[in-house]
Image 1 (spheres, one colour):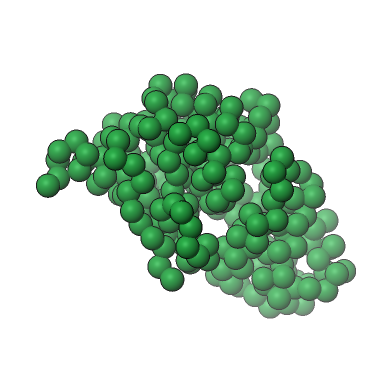
Image 2: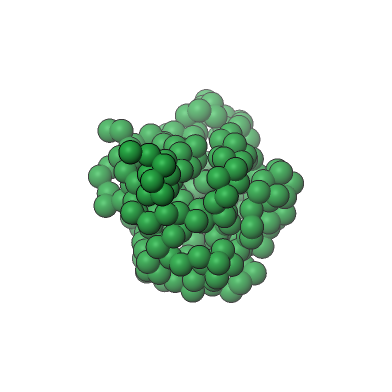
Length: 248
């Protein structure tokens, strides 16, 4: 099923805000494939990515209200779902990979690659004068990752839940982002990879959201779904142009 792409608001978009992990930042699929293969299950990075896209949908369905996405239990569940989708079900192997992940590349962890479309997407928004920022549930490291990857220079601000003391989907972090961007909620769009955290969180403050769905894993949802960052940005740019009378 192809992701549904419809412009989510009739208002001109003045700010486009992003999640970090699994949005502007990508998991290191290569190193995870290497670790899984080293434990007897041959797999490549492409298959790990496909498995992760399915795992995030399963995780979203399992997230109870008030459960932190940054907790050890949530991280463990997410990894277990990902490994199951990779065909790794042996409990000893799952435990070994969980232990490896807990000590890998601290404090950054697995999300230290830029999405291939991230820089171009942010440049497109900058050229249009659309403000940008990040709202991320993280451990205090997301700003340094974005800086190292050369993405922070395109962003007006970065809100890291560990620094501000509140996590998505709590509306307070979205309101703080709107204050930082200097826009009303109806003039902002949020882009993220989890429906219950990103889409529903943004909607609590009156902001619309786009759900990243590269492989059509989310099924029908009551929001616009886009296959990638460039598609999201072009949807916003085209919609904003139309609302400003630049298109028929």
